Length: 465
Image (tube, rainbow, N blue to C red):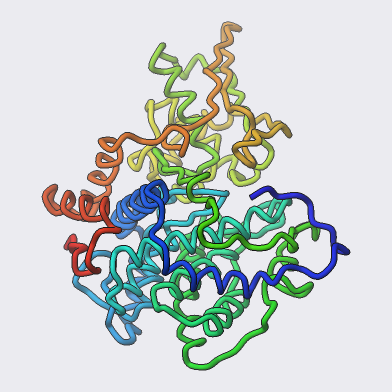
Protein backbone atom coordinates (compact mmCIF):
# COMPACT_ATOMS: atom_id res chain seq x y z
CA UNK A 1 0.00 0.00 0.00
CA UNK A 2 1.42 3.43 -0.88
CA UNK A 3 2.12 5.80 1.98
CA UNK A 4 1.14 9.33 0.90
CA UNK A 5 1.44 11.99 3.58
CA UNK A 6 -1.90 12.29 5.30
CA UNK A 7 -3.53 15.68 5.76
CA UNK A 8 -5.02 16.33 9.22
CA UNK A 9 -7.96 18.23 7.70
CA UNK A 10 -8.76 15.54 5.13
CA UNK A 11 -12.12 14.75 6.67
CA UNK A 12 -13.30 11.90 8.83
CA UNK A 13 -10.60 9.25 9.32
CA UNK A 14 -11.26 5.74 8.09
CA UNK A 15 -12.72 3.46 10.74
CA UNK A 16 -9.47 1.53 11.05
CA UNK A 17 -10.24 -0.17 14.35
CA UNK A 18 -13.53 -1.58 13.03
CA UNK A 19 -12.17 -2.36 9.57
CA UNK A 20 -9.27 -4.32 11.04
CA UNK A 21 -11.65 -6.29 13.23
CA UNK A 22 -13.81 -7.07 10.19
CA UNK A 23 -10.71 -8.12 8.25
CA UNK A 24 -9.66 -10.52 11.02
CA UNK A 25 -13.09 -12.13 11.09
CA UNK A 26 -13.22 -12.46 7.29
CA UNK A 27 -9.75 -14.08 7.20
CA UNK A 28 -11.17 -17.45 8.28
CA UNK A 29 -12.91 -17.82 4.91
CA UNK A 30 -10.91 -18.21 1.68
CA UNK A 31 -7.75 -20.29 1.46
CA UNK A 32 -4.64 -18.08 1.18
CA UNK A 33 -2.62 -18.03 -2.02
CA UNK A 34 0.32 -20.39 -2.41
CA UNK A 35 2.69 -17.40 -2.44
CA UNK A 36 1.36 -16.20 0.91
CA UNK A 37 1.54 -19.70 2.39
CA UNK A 38 5.18 -19.99 1.30
CA UNK A 39 5.96 -16.90 3.39
CA UNK A 40 4.07 -18.38 6.35
CA UNK A 41 6.11 -21.59 6.18
CA UNK A 42 9.32 -19.59 6.02
CA UNK A 43 8.29 -17.44 8.97
CA UNK A 44 7.36 -20.39 11.19
CA UNK A 45 10.53 -22.28 10.30
CA UNK A 46 12.96 -19.42 10.88
CA UNK A 47 11.18 -18.27 14.05
CA UNK A 48 11.45 -21.77 15.51
CA UNK A 49 15.15 -21.86 14.69
CA UNK A 50 16.00 -18.60 16.42
CA UNK A 51 13.75 -19.52 19.35
CA UNK A 52 15.90 -22.58 19.96
CA UNK A 53 19.06 -20.49 19.59
CA UNK A 54 17.76 -17.94 22.09
CA UNK A 55 16.89 -20.40 24.85
CA UNK A 56 20.38 -20.27 26.34
CA UNK A 57 20.52 -16.46 26.48
CA UNK A 58 20.42 -14.86 29.92
CA UNK A 59 17.25 -12.89 29.24
CA UNK A 60 15.43 -16.07 28.21
CA UNK A 61 16.62 -18.04 31.22
CA UNK A 62 15.46 -15.26 33.55
CA UNK A 63 12.11 -14.97 31.77
CA UNK A 64 11.67 -18.74 32.01
CA UNK A 65 12.19 -18.59 35.77
CA UNK A 66 9.54 -15.88 36.00
CA UNK A 67 7.11 -17.91 33.89
CA UNK A 68 7.68 -21.00 36.01
CA UNK A 69 6.92 -18.95 39.11
CA UNK A 70 3.56 -17.87 37.64
CA UNK A 71 2.65 -20.43 34.97
CA UNK A 72 -1.11 -19.86 35.07
CA UNK A 73 -3.23 -22.58 33.48
CA UNK A 74 -0.60 -24.77 31.78
CA UNK A 75 -2.24 -25.30 28.38
CA UNK A 76 0.56 -24.25 26.01
CA UNK A 77 4.00 -25.72 25.43
CA UNK A 78 7.10 -23.71 26.17
CA UNK A 79 9.41 -23.34 23.18
CA UNK A 80 8.90 -26.79 21.61
CA UNK A 81 9.33 -28.68 24.88
CA UNK A 82 6.90 -30.69 26.99
CA UNK A 83 6.87 -28.01 29.70
CA UNK A 84 3.68 -25.93 29.75
CA UNK A 85 2.33 -22.60 30.94
CA UNK A 86 -0.64 -20.39 30.16
CA UNK A 87 -0.93 -19.23 26.54
CA UNK A 88 0.07 -15.66 27.44
CA UNK A 89 3.10 -16.80 29.45
CA UNK A 90 4.14 -19.29 26.76
CA UNK A 91 3.94 -16.56 24.13
CA UNK A 92 5.98 -14.22 26.33
CA UNK A 93 8.79 -16.75 26.70
CA UNK A 94 8.66 -17.84 23.07
CA UNK A 95 8.88 -14.31 21.71
CA UNK A 96 11.68 -13.35 24.11
CA UNK A 97 13.65 -16.39 22.98
CA UNK A 98 12.93 -15.70 19.31
CA UNK A 99 14.23 -12.13 19.57
CA UNK A 100 16.98 -12.74 22.14
CA UNK A 101 19.90 -12.93 19.72
CA UNK A 102 18.39 -10.68 17.03
CA UNK A 103 18.68 -13.38 14.37
CA UNK A 104 14.96 -13.34 13.60
CA UNK A 105 13.40 -12.21 10.34
CA UNK A 106 12.21 -8.71 9.55
CA UNK A 107 9.81 -6.94 7.19
CA UNK A 108 8.67 -3.31 6.95
CA UNK A 109 11.32 -2.48 9.63
CA UNK A 110 9.62 -4.77 12.15
CA UNK A 111 10.11 -8.33 13.42
CA UNK A 112 6.80 -10.03 12.57
CA UNK A 113 7.58 -13.72 13.08
CA UNK A 114 9.25 -13.31 16.48
CA UNK A 115 5.91 -11.99 17.77
CA UNK A 116 3.35 -13.78 15.62
CA UNK A 117 4.69 -17.33 15.67
CA UNK A 118 4.95 -17.67 19.49
CA UNK A 119 1.51 -16.06 19.83
CA UNK A 120 -0.04 -18.45 17.32
CA UNK A 121 1.63 -21.58 18.68
CA UNK A 122 0.58 -20.74 22.24
CA UNK A 123 -3.06 -20.11 21.32
CA UNK A 124 -3.16 -23.09 18.97
CA UNK A 125 -1.96 -25.40 21.76
CA UNK A 126 -4.81 -24.20 23.95
CA UNK A 127 -7.50 -24.15 21.24
CA UNK A 128 -6.51 -27.02 18.96
CA UNK A 129 -6.48 -24.85 15.84
CA UNK A 130 -5.58 -26.48 12.54
CA UNK A 131 -2.42 -25.67 10.65
CA UNK A 132 -4.47 -23.81 8.04
CA UNK A 133 -6.03 -21.66 10.76
CA UNK A 134 -2.55 -20.95 12.13
CA UNK A 135 -1.47 -19.84 8.67
CA UNK A 136 -4.52 -17.58 8.34
CA UNK A 137 -3.75 -16.06 11.74
CA UNK A 138 -0.17 -15.35 10.70
CA UNK A 139 -1.26 -13.69 7.46
CA UNK A 140 -3.85 -11.57 9.25
CA UNK A 141 -1.32 -10.39 11.84
CA UNK A 142 1.29 -9.71 9.17
CA UNK A 143 -1.11 -7.71 6.99
CA UNK A 144 -2.47 -5.58 9.83
CA UNK A 145 1.01 -4.87 11.18
CA UNK A 146 2.46 -4.01 7.79
CA UNK A 147 -0.49 -1.84 6.80
CA UNK A 148 -0.25 0.22 9.99
CA UNK A 149 3.51 0.59 9.69
CA UNK A 150 3.37 1.74 6.09
CA UNK A 151 0.85 4.44 6.92
CA UNK A 152 3.59 6.34 8.77
CA UNK A 153 5.92 8.34 6.49
CA UNK A 154 8.09 9.40 9.43
CA UNK A 155 10.77 7.34 11.17
CA UNK A 156 9.43 5.82 14.39
CA UNK A 157 12.90 4.63 15.42
CA UNK A 158 14.29 8.18 15.36
CA UNK A 159 11.38 9.34 17.51
CA UNK A 160 12.40 6.71 20.06
CA UNK A 161 9.72 4.10 19.33
CA UNK A 162 10.62 0.48 18.63
CA UNK A 163 7.94 -0.43 16.05
CA UNK A 164 7.96 -4.12 17.02
CA UNK A 165 6.97 -3.13 20.54
CA UNK A 166 4.32 -0.54 19.70
CA UNK A 167 2.59 -2.21 16.73
CA UNK A 168 3.31 -5.83 17.61
CA UNK A 169 0.55 -5.99 20.26
CA UNK A 170 -2.08 -5.06 17.65
CA UNK A 171 -0.87 -7.74 15.24
CA UNK A 172 -0.69 -10.36 17.99
CA UNK A 173 -4.24 -9.53 19.09
CA UNK A 174 -5.47 -9.93 15.52
CA UNK A 175 -3.71 -13.29 15.15
CA UNK A 176 -5.11 -14.56 18.45
CA UNK A 177 -8.60 -13.35 17.50
CA UNK A 178 -8.46 -15.30 14.23
CA UNK A 179 -7.44 -18.46 16.06
CA UNK A 180 -10.16 -18.03 18.68
CA UNK A 181 -12.79 -17.20 16.03
CA UNK A 182 -13.98 -14.12 17.88
CA UNK A 183 -17.03 -12.28 16.58
CA UNK A 184 -16.64 -8.81 15.08
CA UNK A 185 -17.56 -6.84 18.20
CA UNK A 186 -15.28 -8.82 20.50
CA UNK A 187 -12.45 -8.58 17.99
CA UNK A 188 -12.89 -4.82 17.75
CA UNK A 189 -12.61 -4.50 21.51
CA UNK A 190 -9.48 -6.68 21.51
CA UNK A 191 -7.87 -4.54 18.80
CA UNK A 192 -8.77 -1.36 20.65
CA UNK A 193 -7.43 -2.75 23.92
CA UNK A 194 -4.15 -3.66 22.23
CA UNK A 195 -3.58 0.01 21.45
CA UNK A 196 -3.27 0.62 25.18
CA UNK A 197 -0.64 -2.11 25.52
CA UNK A 198 1.84 -0.53 23.10
CA UNK A 199 5.24 0.44 24.47
CA UNK A 200 8.96 0.02 23.89
CA UNK A 201 11.72 2.58 23.36
CA UNK A 202 14.91 2.60 21.34
CA UNK A 203 16.93 3.53 24.42
CA UNK A 204 16.63 -0.13 25.46
CA UNK A 205 18.39 -1.45 22.34
CA UNK A 206 21.57 -3.31 23.21
CA UNK A 207 20.11 -4.56 26.51
CA UNK A 208 17.94 -7.45 27.72
CA UNK A 209 14.92 -5.20 27.42
CA UNK A 210 14.85 -5.36 23.61
CA UNK A 211 13.82 -9.06 23.45
CA UNK A 212 11.19 -8.24 26.07
CA UNK A 213 9.65 -5.85 23.55
CA UNK A 214 8.74 -8.84 21.38
CA UNK A 215 7.75 -10.93 24.40
CA UNK A 216 5.41 -8.32 25.80
CA UNK A 217 3.85 -7.75 22.37
CA UNK A 218 3.00 -11.44 22.04
CA UNK A 219 1.82 -11.73 25.64
CA UNK A 220 -0.30 -8.58 25.35
CA UNK A 221 -2.03 -9.78 22.20
CA UNK A 222 -3.26 -12.88 23.98
CA UNK A 223 -4.16 -11.03 27.15
CA UNK A 224 -6.35 -8.46 25.39
CA UNK A 225 -8.24 -11.21 23.58
CA UNK A 226 -8.95 -12.82 26.94
CA UNK A 227 -10.06 -9.48 28.34
CA UNK A 228 -12.37 -8.83 25.41
CA UNK A 229 -13.87 -12.31 25.75
CA UNK A 230 -14.46 -11.60 29.44
CA UNK A 231 -16.45 -8.50 28.51
CA UNK A 232 -13.96 -5.64 28.82
CA UNK A 233 -14.75 -2.97 26.27
CA UNK A 234 -12.54 -0.30 24.70
CA UNK A 235 -12.82 2.77 22.48
CA UNK A 236 -14.22 2.22 19.01
CA UNK A 237 -11.56 4.46 17.39
CA UNK A 238 -8.49 3.56 19.46
CA UNK A 239 -6.24 3.39 16.40
CA UNK A 240 -7.48 6.26 14.23
CA UNK A 241 -8.73 8.82 16.75
CA UNK A 242 -6.81 12.14 17.01
CA UNK A 243 -5.95 10.82 20.46
CA UNK A 244 -5.41 7.26 19.30
CA UNK A 245 -2.34 5.09 18.90
CA UNK A 246 -1.34 6.01 15.35
CA UNK A 247 -1.39 9.77 15.89
CA UNK A 248 0.29 9.41 19.29
CA UNK A 249 3.20 7.49 17.74
CA UNK A 250 3.60 9.68 14.66
CA UNK A 251 6.77 11.79 14.77
CA UNK A 252 5.28 14.62 12.68
CA UNK A 253 1.56 13.86 12.76
CA UNK A 254 1.50 12.95 9.05
CA UNK A 255 0.25 9.41 9.48
CA UNK A 256 -2.28 8.25 6.87
CA UNK A 257 -5.51 7.67 8.75
CA UNK A 258 -7.81 8.05 5.78
CA UNK A 259 -7.01 5.23 3.38
CA UNK A 260 -9.49 2.41 4.05
CA UNK A 261 -8.05 -0.88 5.27
CA UNK A 262 -7.94 -3.51 2.48
CA UNK A 263 -10.46 -6.33 2.43
CA UNK A 264 -9.70 -10.03 2.46
CA UNK A 265 -9.08 -11.19 -1.10
CA UNK A 266 -7.28 -8.04 -2.23
CA UNK A 267 -3.56 -8.38 -3.03
CA UNK A 268 -1.67 -8.49 0.25
CA UNK A 269 1.57 -7.10 1.58
CA UNK A 270 2.75 -10.60 2.45
CA UNK A 271 2.92 -11.44 -1.25
CA UNK A 272 4.57 -8.13 -2.10
CA UNK A 273 7.13 -7.89 0.70
CA UNK A 274 7.61 -11.41 2.04
CA UNK A 275 10.19 -11.87 4.78
CA UNK A 276 13.85 -10.98 5.05
CA UNK A 277 15.73 -13.83 6.70
CA UNK A 278 18.92 -12.87 8.48
CA UNK A 279 22.01 -14.78 7.52
CA UNK A 280 23.92 -13.09 10.35
CA UNK A 281 22.80 -12.62 14.00
CA UNK A 282 22.98 -8.82 13.94
CA UNK A 283 20.55 -6.00 13.26
CA UNK A 284 19.01 -6.05 9.78
CA UNK A 285 20.62 -2.72 8.90
CA UNK A 286 24.06 -4.36 9.07
CA UNK A 287 23.40 -7.34 6.80
CA UNK A 288 24.38 -5.71 3.50
CA UNK A 289 27.65 -4.41 4.94
CA UNK A 290 28.61 -7.90 6.09
CA UNK A 291 27.83 -9.34 2.67
CA UNK A 292 29.92 -6.61 1.03
CA UNK A 293 32.97 -7.28 3.22
CA UNK A 294 32.72 -11.05 2.93
CA UNK A 295 32.57 -10.70 -0.83
CA UNK A 296 35.76 -8.64 -0.78
CA UNK A 297 37.53 -11.06 1.56
CA UNK A 298 36.62 -13.96 -0.69
CA UNK A 299 38.63 -12.26 -3.45
CA UNK A 300 41.62 -11.02 -1.48
CA UNK A 301 43.15 -11.22 1.97
CA UNK A 302 43.32 -8.07 4.08
CA UNK A 303 46.03 -7.56 6.69
CA UNK A 304 44.20 -5.68 9.43
CA UNK A 305 47.49 -4.28 10.73
CA UNK A 306 47.74 -2.36 7.47
CA UNK A 307 44.19 -0.96 7.62
CA UNK A 308 44.39 2.76 8.32
CA UNK A 309 40.70 3.62 7.98
CA UNK A 310 37.45 1.92 7.00
CA UNK A 311 34.52 3.94 5.66
CA UNK A 312 31.13 2.21 5.59
CA UNK A 313 28.25 3.84 3.76
CA UNK A 314 24.65 3.24 4.90
CA UNK A 315 21.45 5.25 4.98
CA UNK A 316 20.72 7.77 7.71
CA UNK A 317 17.83 5.64 8.96
CA UNK A 318 19.92 2.48 9.12
CA UNK A 319 22.69 4.32 10.93
CA UNK A 320 20.14 5.43 13.52
CA UNK A 321 19.49 1.84 14.63
CA UNK A 322 23.20 1.12 15.09
CA UNK A 323 24.11 3.61 17.83
CA UNK A 324 26.92 1.67 19.57
CA UNK A 325 30.04 3.04 17.95
CA UNK A 326 32.40 1.48 20.48
CA UNK A 327 30.45 -1.59 21.58
CA UNK A 328 31.69 -3.29 24.73
CA UNK A 329 29.26 -6.21 25.03
CA UNK A 330 27.73 -8.73 22.65
CA UNK A 331 24.31 -7.16 23.17
CA UNK A 332 25.64 -3.79 22.04
CA UNK A 333 27.66 -5.33 19.22
CA UNK A 334 24.50 -6.51 17.47
CA UNK A 335 23.70 -2.82 16.90
CA UNK A 336 27.17 -1.63 15.97
CA UNK A 337 28.28 -1.24 12.36
CA UNK A 338 31.82 -0.66 13.62
CA UNK A 339 31.75 -4.07 15.28
CA UNK A 340 30.50 -6.02 12.28
CA UNK A 341 33.18 -4.40 10.13
CA UNK A 342 35.89 -5.26 12.68
CA UNK A 343 34.62 -8.83 13.14
CA UNK A 344 34.50 -9.41 9.38
CA UNK A 345 38.01 -8.13 8.83
CA UNK A 346 39.45 -10.09 11.75
CA UNK A 347 37.61 -13.39 11.33
CA UNK A 348 36.00 -13.26 7.92
CA UNK A 349 32.52 -13.73 9.33
CA UNK A 350 29.98 -12.51 11.88
CA UNK A 351 28.29 -15.36 13.69
CA UNK A 352 27.33 -16.49 17.15
CA UNK A 353 30.99 -17.26 17.89
CA UNK A 354 31.88 -13.61 17.26
CA UNK A 355 29.00 -12.30 19.35
CA UNK A 356 30.62 -13.12 22.66
CA UNK A 357 31.60 -10.54 25.26
CA UNK A 358 35.24 -11.61 25.34
CA UNK A 359 35.66 -11.21 21.58
CA UNK A 360 33.79 -7.90 21.46
CA UNK A 361 35.89 -6.43 24.27
CA UNK A 362 39.20 -7.79 22.98
CA UNK A 363 41.99 -5.33 22.24
CA UNK A 364 42.05 -6.28 18.55
CA UNK A 365 38.33 -5.62 18.03
CA UNK A 366 38.30 -2.44 20.07
CA UNK A 367 41.30 -1.03 18.21
CA UNK A 368 39.90 -1.85 14.79
CA UNK A 369 36.47 -0.37 15.64
CA UNK A 370 38.18 2.95 16.30
CA UNK A 371 39.38 2.94 12.69
CA UNK A 372 35.86 2.58 11.28
CA UNK A 373 33.95 5.65 10.14
CA UNK A 374 30.31 5.66 9.07
CA UNK A 375 29.18 7.78 6.14
CA UNK A 376 25.47 8.23 5.64
CA UNK A 377 23.26 9.19 2.74
CA UNK A 378 19.77 10.61 2.61
CA UNK A 379 19.11 8.74 -0.65
CA UNK A 380 16.74 5.81 -0.33
CA UNK A 381 15.83 2.76 -2.35
CA UNK A 382 12.11 3.18 -3.13
CA UNK A 383 11.70 -0.60 -3.09
CA UNK A 384 13.48 -1.01 0.26
CA UNK A 385 12.16 1.67 2.63
CA UNK A 386 14.79 3.09 4.95
CA UNK A 387 17.74 1.62 3.06
CA UNK A 388 20.26 3.38 0.86
CA UNK A 389 20.29 2.44 -2.83
CA UNK A 390 23.27 0.25 -1.91
CA UNK A 391 25.66 -0.30 1.00
CA UNK A 392 29.41 -0.61 0.49
CA UNK A 393 32.73 -0.25 2.32
CA UNK A 394 36.02 1.45 1.41
CA UNK A 395 39.32 0.59 3.04
CA UNK A 396 42.36 2.87 3.16
CA UNK A 397 45.60 1.05 3.84
CA UNK A 398 48.73 2.40 5.48
CA UNK A 399 50.53 2.67 2.13
CA UNK A 400 47.75 4.84 0.68
CA UNK A 401 46.05 2.04 -1.28
CA UNK A 402 42.24 2.23 -1.40
CA UNK A 403 40.10 -0.87 -1.75
CA UNK A 404 36.33 -0.85 -2.24
CA UNK A 405 33.81 -3.64 -1.83
CA UNK A 406 31.05 -4.25 -4.31
CA UNK A 407 27.89 -2.24 -3.81
CA UNK A 408 25.26 -4.50 -2.25
CA UNK A 409 21.58 -3.76 -2.92
CA UNK A 410 20.10 -6.85 -1.28
CA UNK A 411 21.60 -8.88 1.52
CA UNK A 412 21.62 -12.65 1.25
CA UNK A 413 18.31 -13.76 2.76
CA UNK A 414 16.37 -10.69 1.69
CA UNK A 415 12.99 -11.50 0.18
CA UNK A 416 14.44 -10.55 -3.23
CA UNK A 417 17.46 -12.83 -2.67
CA UNK A 418 16.09 -15.68 -0.54
CA UNK A 419 18.16 -18.27 1.26
CA UNK A 420 18.08 -21.63 -0.52
CA UNK A 421 16.30 -24.34 1.49
CA UNK A 422 19.64 -25.99 2.20
CA UNK A 423 20.96 -22.80 3.83
CA UNK A 424 17.73 -22.34 5.78
CA UNK A 425 18.15 -25.88 7.11
CA UNK A 426 21.80 -25.19 7.94
CA UNK A 427 20.76 -22.19 10.03
CA UNK A 428 17.99 -24.24 11.68
CA UNK A 429 20.40 -27.07 12.50
CA UNK A 430 22.98 -24.67 13.95
CA UNK A 431 20.31 -23.10 16.16
CA UNK A 432 19.01 -26.51 17.31
CA UNK A 433 22.52 -27.57 18.29
CA UNK A 434 22.52 -24.79 20.88
CA UNK A 435 19.91 -26.81 22.84
CA UNK A 436 21.77 -30.07 22.11
CA UNK A 437 18.95 -31.38 19.93
CA UNK A 438 19.79 -34.33 17.75
CA UNK A 439 19.83 -33.84 14.00
CA UNK A 440 16.91 -36.29 13.72
CA UNK A 441 14.72 -34.27 16.10
CA UNK A 442 15.73 -30.99 14.50
CA UNK A 443 14.93 -32.28 11.04
CA UNK A 444 11.55 -33.60 12.16
CA UNK A 445 10.59 -30.19 13.53
CA UNK A 446 11.97 -28.41 10.47
CA UNK A 447 9.97 -30.61 8.11
CA UNK A 448 6.75 -30.13 10.09
CA UNK A 449 7.07 -26.35 10.03
CA UNK A 450 7.82 -26.40 6.31
CA UNK A 451 4.26 -27.70 5.86
CA UNK A 452 2.60 -25.88 8.76
CA UNK A 453 -0.56 -25.08 6.78
CA UNK A 454 -1.27 -28.78 6.14
CA UNK A 455 -1.02 -29.97 9.75
CA UNK A 456 -4.17 -31.21 11.46
CA UNK A 457 -3.28 -29.39 14.65
CA UNK A 458 -0.52 -28.40 17.08
CA UNK A 459 -0.06 -32.04 18.08
CA UNK A 460 1.64 -32.52 14.70
CA UNK A 461 4.41 -30.10 15.72
CA UNK A 462 7.04 -32.29 17.41
CA UNK A 463 8.83 -31.35 20.61
CA UNK A 464 12.54 -30.78 20.39
CA UNK A 465 13.32 -31.75 23.99
